[in-house]
Structures are given as structure tokens and as C-alpha cells.
Image (cartoon, rainbow, N blue to C red):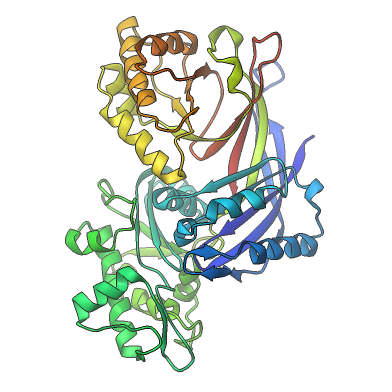
Length: 476
């Protein structure tokens, strides 16, 4: 099999859409080298229309209507569930806060057996949207720093890439549908946070079904939103930014000088292609785009239009199979199979600190990632340890044991993948330091990247090898 059909389904605060793609695989290594199977070509076969995300009320998505949309788009694309061999369902923005978000993502994943299903927290969504918009690739190709603002209905995700490497990210409660109104300009929805902020900053009460808003009033609000985006980029006005920071996100720390700005998300279409009717969508979208066009983001910085704006998301998930050397793995028989493990790439700083016996950075990164994915089940990838001394291995094991002891979910194993050939020794040493009983899986020699998801099957070859499926999110 050299190619597969993959589907990407994106359920955001404002919009829902689907993309069908064909992913082609090839071996980049020579005939005598270890196989390096990767995606060599991606071809978009079909893009659905963009739908307003159906909701039952403020707290629940309408799962039945979302499923109807996807089923209808499968028919429009001319594909059946059995044709699809991999895919990704991503729930982002305020949608992931809905009480039934997990139930709906699981329901949609049944379209095919190899779907990656994830809810992306604010920081993780920033990374996904920045890559999907092409900011990561542009920064690498042009050897520069690119800041991408993904402006949706409920949030704005900022991701900053320097020469292809992510250097910072954050998320703000700034978006096109935080305030909505009917054809008579009477308010039908106001975000609870912005309702209190408007009262505080503008001394106005926005009352549902009572207050009629004017263009000037809405523009005053969106001008403040645009100015906040400038301030977060320039690390100015921290007090103002903190009040609009999305729950679970952090203020950026290492942005530095920015060479280029790009915009993605639904509001981006109105930034690059201005709409004449300010009330076109009965929300803030068009007016917010105007405020941004008039702000210093557009006058003081070079800006580009990315290859994707409203569809800055995954087009599916590619898969490839690899094997793990039996001499360097440690596992428990009752662990398998493991499905859709998100990969956390441990930073070099955290890994080096752990080798010295300091676990704080490692624990903070694991806790942050857990909040982003809504689960403690993940794969920790140690990519930079190289050869370590016995003392360093013991320090690293002790720090990983501390992480394992902090896991609250029952039956949640500690899963570690190492770049260097030390997994079995590391796993055995971790077990010595555990304060509470916890299943451990340590392995090496598997190639993964940030944003990958991993399936691990039952041991084969008389228990000497674990079959690993790495599912890589693929962007359009």
C-alpha cells in the first residue's frame, strides 16, 4: 500500500468543515539502509463547505446535526467509511468547553478505525493553526520569525516560529462571535468575560434581548481587541493582556523580534478580503477585521497572506509502521493495545535538568500538556539525552518516577520513548524509584515528531518487538 485516503474534521467555535486527502508514502532511505517511511505527497481530493457549528445551547454541541453534516459531506465527496484508512477529528476553541465535546468526538471517530481524536487546548490549538496556515514552513524557508494570529469565533491563537522552530504561543479571548446581535442590532449573545470587561472599561451594560448596539460602540470594543493583539506581540500592557488571556493559556515569554505577521481563521478572510457590509454575519467578525487593518499590526509589520486562512487545520493523519528493538524495551503484558497516545516532545532544557536531578521543568511540561489534551495519558519523548552516565541515568529515572507518582488517572501508565539506546535500563531504574505502583513502558528507536499520535500493539516475535503505528497530523 503506497497511498491512503485520510479525512480531517475540524469542529471550531464558529465553523465546522471537512477535508479529504490522498497521502502517498515512500522510503526515503537507500535499499541497504534502515527504512525511513514518510509522507512524500499529499493531494487534496475534496473540501467541504464551511458550516456554522451547530449547538443545542451555550453548553452543548448538537452532535446529531454535526454527524449529519459529516455524513452528507462523505456522500458529496464520493467516499464511504470503508474507503477511509486514517483521519483526525479536532475540536478547538470554545467548542472543547462544551459538556458533550468528548462524546461527540468519539462518535465521529467511528467513521474509521484509525482516526486521531483530540480536543486541542488553547496552546496546542495555537501550534496546530500556525502550522496549518503555513507560518512554520514560511519561517523555515525564509530564515525569519513569523507570528501567526489565528482569529476564530471565540479565541485568537498566537504562535511564533523562528526558522521553522516554535518559540512561543498563547491564546486570548478575542474573536468574531463573542458578541452577536439580530437584524435589528439587538444583542442575542455576549461572552460572559466580555460582558464584565465592557462594563468595567466602557461603563456600559450589554443586556441580552434588550441592548441595541451601534457600529460605533462595537468598533470601540474591536479597536481594544486589536490593540491588545499589538500589545501581546510587543509584550506591552501585560495587565490588559492578562485579563483577556484564555483559561489554560500562558503569557508569551520569548517572542523577541518578529519579521512577518500572518492571519488565519474565519476573521482572516475579512482582513485580507474586506467585506462591505459590517453586519454581514451579525457578529464582530467584519468590524474586528477592520480594526486590525487599521492597527499597527498592518502598518508597523510586514504581513503576508497564508496559503490557508479559514481552513488552517489538519487535512488528516498519515500512518506508518515501524518496529522497536527487543533488547532495549521494558513493558508490562497487560498494557496493550494502546491507542492514540499524543506525543510530548520534552524540551532539551527539561531533559538536561532531569539528568542533573532537577524535575521541576519536566513536571511543568507534562502538566501543561495534560491540560492541553484533557488527559494524563501521553508519550514522553526524550530526544536529546544522547549517551548518559550511570549517575545521569539514575537522576533522569528519579525525575520520571516523580512524574509517574503525580499521575492521578487510574491505570494510566508512564510511557517513555528515548532517542538513545537506553530504554530498558531506564525503565528498570524508574521502577526502583516509584513510590506508588504504576505500569511503565520504555522503548527507543522510534521516529516521532511534535503533534504525532502513536498506537502500540501487543508484543510480537515472541515478545521481542512492539508494533508501533505513528500517526502524523498532516496540513493542507
